[in-house]
Image (cartoon, rainbow, N blue to C red; front, side, top):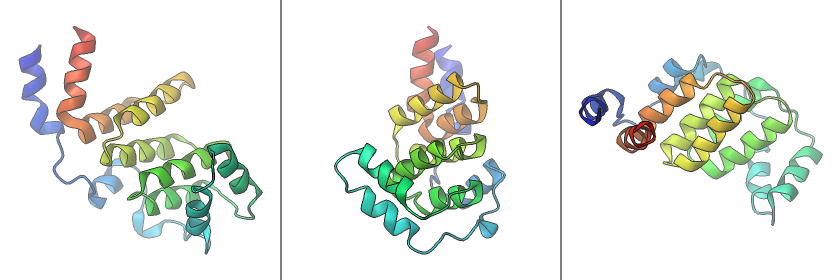
Length: 159
């Protein structure tokens, strides 16, 4: 079993972690046509991220005048992809607004994977599973982003 797992490693391991080609092929998202973000939205996310608690940050986001729909939600996560904490805060806000569809969840898994945030990504997959969302793409993203570490953990769980 272990030799089979190791033989698949080059197939799943990705050397180009921030490739935009990978993301556009993986998610049905046209990066060139993402919805433009309202001016000041990213600044707002940065400001509320400095508040004492996530509850305070969420309350500030909810009280803001910004409208968040699926398209602007994808754009927001994409724009914050280099700052996983901010992207995750935006994701949690979108979740409250009902924008956390399959594509958004998979995109967040991709962002977390690029930053090696295995535990957070795994919790998100578990939450997806608990609400009956399809976790297959998320699991492949985990394998791609975490490569060897993920395969070893899975093989240990299966043994």
